[in-house]
Length: 472
Image (cartoon, rainbow, N blue to C red; front, side, top):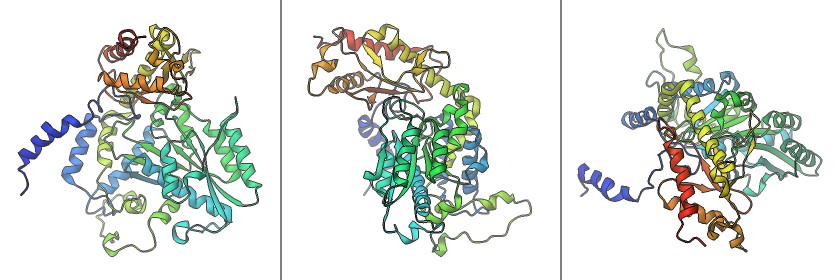
């Protein structure tokens, strides 16, 4: 017969909620490079549910939702100091994976057209032509790139993460591989994908050099900037906004550094016509068509240039996910987001410094150090990749030499023990012989706390080494 609302609420709060992950939106949750949810974004998310707008067809005299989504995506470009005209195709998606699918879809059709010499060929309409292989060449790609390749028919095995020789630049390795494909007997279409803020280290690829190589070989350049884009706000990284503007297509994820609730992927492309040719199709059901409607005299002309979202994203209908992002943008502004990024990066660097030259150095080693603007060693963004030292000064269970056949267990054991404290949460990092990753992305981390969050993290990492009951 169903339950009254009060019983449903009590059931969730008193029975189900105790099984939810604790602290996932809190200041010391450092897993998965996910942010929290700003108060303004939470407000926008609640209002999104209340108003329940279905953002699919552009009907500007009925609802401003599609126009507001368009403006919100322009505000993101403004924040990143990227001219609005750079990316004429834009969309919101269910997350960074959805945006990466869109990027590889556009890259797929572009690459096929280049390979067969037919500027009008549509894979979306005609399928893959015979005798063509698509290769996606990457620099330390996120796993969602492989998922995207699998979904759109390129195939996971055709995603090639280029392995660099010692001291070799990615751009040189890329050019060598593209030249090999150009001179090979079969036809190879190419997409190049790089991360803007690599997920394990926070590192950046030289995108300008990659852009030049892609232009020479006609390759599509997709940039996955899911969590690194807001680095452009800081003087130290200000030159990077020009680099992500080099993309043919671009992925961002507002649930990371933007601190907007989940299902807030952002996608841009230079080629709006290509995007809509893939997603709009040739037959639109009558009930989904944007019927012509009379316009009032003061109607803004730009509103009629907005595409119906069902022609620019994977879903035919979805919720009004632009509203939480819009609320966050106008609440934070450039000043607020700059302060947030500064705070997160400084937190990561202070922790890395403690592991490098402070007390933590006797137990831990940092694996993603670079030379900072001041000449000092630091981590490149908001990620600390580290592992326990393999010395007699630490408990045997955290020494790689203690696990002769599986040395990565040293780091995995440390991760389990850190998370068991319930005082902070970390996740594994990709590194030879194992690593621990701390990704600082939450807006509340270190916010007006007089350094309490950093002290708490250091205390946990120190006590694990000094007070573990299994000390050897």
